[in-house]
Length: 497
Image 1 (cartoon, one colour):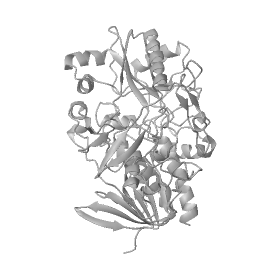
Image 2 (cartoon, one colour; image 1 turned 120 degrees about the vertical axis):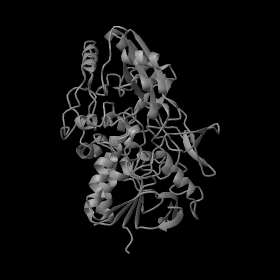
Image 3 (cartoon, helix red, strand yellow; image 1 turned 180 degrees about the horizontal axis):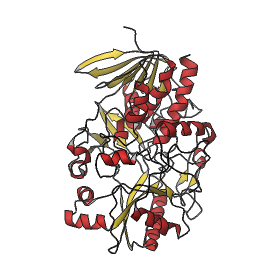
Image 4 (cartoon, one colour; image 1 turned 45 degrees about the horizontal axis):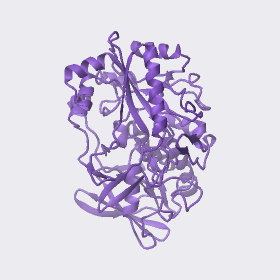
């Protein structure tokens, strides 16, 4: 049997989108996925099972910087973490690609500009059937094509919140979402944020990009295939070692794309030492695993005993008035967007509050997310201790995040929710993980080229959130997809034609 021309490791946003881009080449493409397809079950729409019992959390433990074990909630299925994501598909702002001065430092900028990625953003929005609208957000960059679908409609309470924010001179607008609302609600009356997509309606990596790739007979998905090591000789990757059904095997292909996510991809490179690569593959620069970023995230709720929140999904608007300015010297603060509807069961599961108390708070409040950029630091990194992943995240830019929360709370009080509370997301939840194999022009200071090929290996590409030089202050999924489409065009033209 003839072997594959391309092996793609991982089927999340990066791997699945890359597969969709390469599939029309006709070359044999093998996608290796560590997990199995996520099957439907009653727990799929049960908030107590998801938030209280952690029904879907994988039985996997990492270590933090102090050596304490924690469960990261990193998901392994076709579609990867996107099976549970909030389906927000936003573009980086044009300013995010250049060095940007923040309160606690300046970002390094990218080796490419927004204009280099813009048409791939449009293609990614089409692939993921994004719902959105332009002309609401003064920070929105140029779009060469409109959104494929109109925005997900606001529920009445959120329409009122939008009106009250706009009355303050702010610019709330539609949140770009990959959600077919009718299909999602047909599966159950819940939000989609953190709920698994087992009944359709959420545009994730499996339902969009992977499905598109598998329409081609030259593309094969192998599930239950956990890659444990990459093999290399000199400047070429020679094999992919994996375990499947309790057995080890080695596969090879002329081209390999590593798309396992920022943490796992870097851990796999670090584990793959070889002659000439004593510190792991693609790591001559000593940058693999470094510059880990994860956003500064806080839930912010506005409570009013005089208003009742009867929404089902809630997650439809965003606010970027403080995205590029707002600090004491005009520094950026970040993005504000709705969370998925927090019910009493969800709040009780997350906070430990008695259910009646949690239900009253949830039903008399609106629920938002404040997101600020996490700046890259070499000491914020992924390492290994034996075969255990160690995540040493050194949060940065927290001053800006606190100012963003302060401004948001004040806006909520003016809007009619007199009590405003906030709670930071746990550091042990790497939901927006990025960095660890950043792109750059200098092989001594980066891991991959702007085309996402490893500087040190001629036939290895890395195509996931690990290559992002900065985290910006938006959800990373659409940028990962756009980079994958751009890399796919490059790989096709350079290697597959």
